Length: 94
Image 1 (cartoon, rainbow, N blue to C red):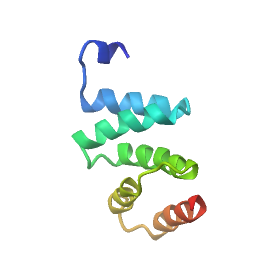
Image 2 (cartoon, helix red, strand yellow):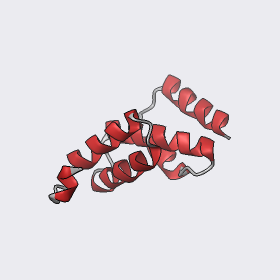
Image 3 (cartoon, one colour):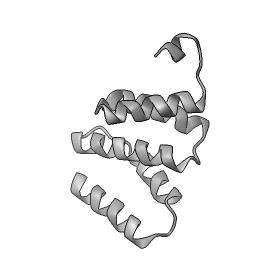
Image 4 (cartoon, rainbow, N blue to C red):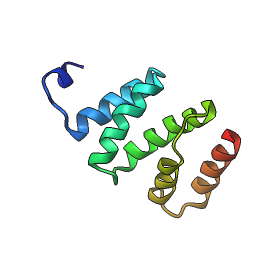
């Protein structure tokens, strides 16, 4: 948080804070920081994976954003196994 206090607001700062909060299971902060990173660089697959996973957990709680899941599917390539896992998670969430 000292980074933010000193106005270090780069993609890497947001992404690393988001991943740290994800691992701490603090989903609200995960969402905030990974979304900020996403809006800076929407093509970073690692960021999108953490963001979509966090938002999937929000979907389970009824407050997720399906747009990010669609972006995750778009960025994850054409791997059928990955697609089926994503859709299975979506189905389970609903």
